[in-house]
Image (cartoon, rainbow over all chains, first blue to last red; front, side, top):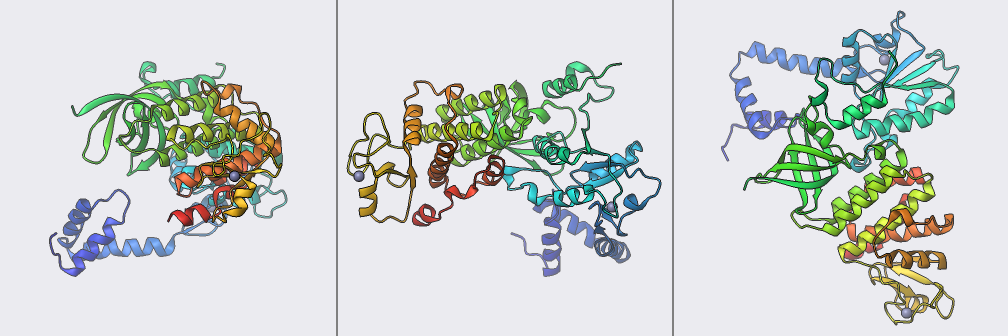
Length: 204
Length: 281
Ligand SMILES: [Zn+2]
Ligand SMILES: [Zn+2]
């Protein structure tokens, strides 16, 4: 094992903690960074510290934000009656990029994955239920909850679990449709996606 | 030969890096296989659907130093309905985790493979109508799985003094009950139990439970479709006894049990006495 100067070892160790970064990549990134001009490295370090210190989870929807409640929660042009439930903050950004959805969000921070020890109690489900209680000051009557969890086995299980909890509250519960990739050839689509797309067919 | 094809069921599938999956497969010919599936969370490859839990497929794998990698998948049966019902999903998760813990890499267990496929097919075709039904299927699986692993509980009489069960009922000759103790390998009569103070309390079994277990053990071909739902108290006793038994051999926390127990309205603590685990440590 090569002996690095201690500050370099420390940098490699810290970079190696990032997701998807193995020891080899950590070493490559570290050597790259120490070869850059100090101003550039300072800017990166500043951005890291700044982002971490200024970003929090919104106390209402649990998305990442620099103001609490977040802009998506307070924007008066958005529809208070529709709530879209997603697994991760990145899903909010993905849906926002479509420009199609104008309601509010709720981020669960994961999906039910029993084998990984992730049960309903490890998600922001209690917080979701609280938002659906009628008469809650900060959330006027939500009429529809859209379950936009992933189409993985865990995402589906989470959607089923939520549907079971939410339906008795008298709110409309919907699940995003499974579709074929736009522009794709039918015979290249896997059987599971195709059977789900058939199940979700609609009149034209 | 670096590349090979095998029939397998996905026991477990975890995200790996940005776009990949780390999959645990149970193959009929290879035993357990740990493999990576590149791009299985992105794009339109057949690996996306083929690396979801409970899927039964033909896999082409490439042998690696530590992990194999999946290069092609031909779905045989996706067991889609298992994901469409919470009880089925929770039960299949539990069963897959138990199989994952109790099988070894590259050690074929064709009996376990067939049993797992049989249960998944049953869940796919006849999703359990009630928690009681799911509980019965769970116990049925656990009993047969123990048998396949070579830990078949002895249920003909006391394993210590060989006192037999009465022919048609689960009562001991002195009517004082029978206990299931995994460390002893099966049933123990109450007098033997009181004479040999063990760290392991075991579970007291009623007549209905003993008869049910014996009937399952005598099945010529394990058939979950023929499993009659026991009464509610018997179903709970069955679950407590067999979860304890399985826990003894798994010797790890079974992480999917609390969710299954929540849906079934049972407690997850069945196997958590600490006794067997402590005494084996
Ligand atoms: Zn918010
Ligand atoms: Zn005895």
